Image (cartoon, rainbow, N blue to C red; front, side, top):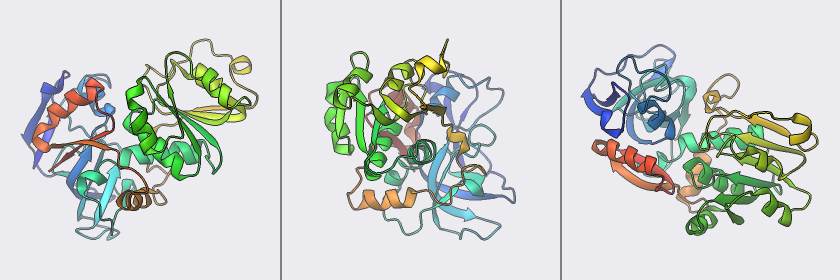
Length: 328
């Protein structure tokens, strides 16, 4: 099978297309014929050597959509449409930049009956599963609450805006450029804040008592300001590292958090684990609503499989407003 491998750290040019044997399959795994996959920052970090040394050929990729080739348990039938994300892909096992991938059965999501094209489905798994975990499990977003999405123009940020709106929240989205405001409102933002400093003061002008929740994608560099927007018993869930490592220096729980407020970091590695099984994920529900137009597509651009290095260059340019996907 054809697959991209990384044999040494570097720029997009170190992604090499190779002929590899079909991946082996353990009893607790299923084999998938990959039809398309989304691109993520985690893959560019791996390629650049920011996720530890590269001591041998590594196949990147943490998500994919495709069809079942084999499932020893019989849980999934051959040819069934599915999605997969995380489960150690690119870290503990070869990733999804390949024609075939073997994944843990617990990290497979049924998409049977969906009508979206493969490239549209490929824009969903990692982004929507992450925001599902963060918004519903970590933050407990409910209809009528107010949610601030900080770093909203990233692909996961756009998914958070769309999913938060679908859950019935009032969504405030941030961006560093006024040129992105129309796209954020199209996806579902009720308000857009163009960041030229702190965000909390702007939020407090509209919501003097504070807001219910913040999804923090920029990271530790701005989280103190995000926390200031909360009401008592509000919550912040960090999911992004765009602003640097998730480290807070000299953070005072009594002074820097509003009364009884909560702060957590949601790692997407939980997806498919015993702590967060994927059986009740809303991925098919999201796909159906994208198909009928009730949720806007996040897909920004589609690349052919031979153009993955060019796609990596684009994601690192920060010019893509939405999800980049690759199709076969």
